[in-house]
Length: 279
Ligand code: GLU
Image (tube, rainbow, N blue to C red; front, side, top):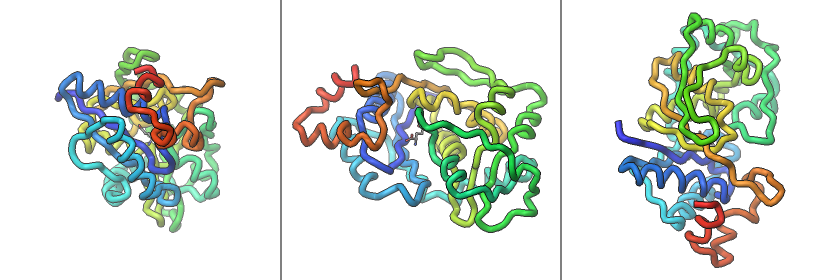
């Protein structure tokens, strides 16, 4: 299959220089290879995702000179389509319901970010069976059982980014210690969590090469584990450097001063932006 990549922002704030770098890099890679560049709105967080941000992101990407292939995929329009994967994992005995606090679960639902510590779930609800599930319970992956499923033959993935180039095999001890039992869904509100939704949509959009920031590299194992359990082929990954501010901090959505809209208002051109981010 020819090269297909995607840009997958969460419409919870303005596009900033870091996003622009990710989008332009993926776009340029696709165009240089005669491949496809797709767009996906990761808007499963129904509280924080806003149509205004969605519209602003599309406008900023167009202003930057990007074009994407096919319609924009909005996860919020497909919430039911993640259920078969959850059912499959449940039938394999790999999920358990969890009633731990909303804030704990909320933290686990969002896409992880550098600087935001990922908390490995302590396993409070791990003993629970699916039959004890109550409305509003989250569903977690029972990682120990999921790993046991591979019978010692752990899947691997290929990384083409400059920082971690090469083939990486899933290390079960590392996955247990660093990632743990992630939330895959919270029922009642029909919300599928980032790890599963994003991995499944890479399959749905037939992505061959996932291009994104290095802050997500540490979480590739969980997506590879999920896709392998569900019988899907694993895409290649390309994690790029992050755009940082003068103090070396990664730019985040709250850094409005570095939003593309602010630079546009200040009269910068798309070429100025490319120069600023070193493209
Ligand atoms: N939606 C995620 C974010 O905005 C990116 C997910 C990905 O590229 O896999 O941080």
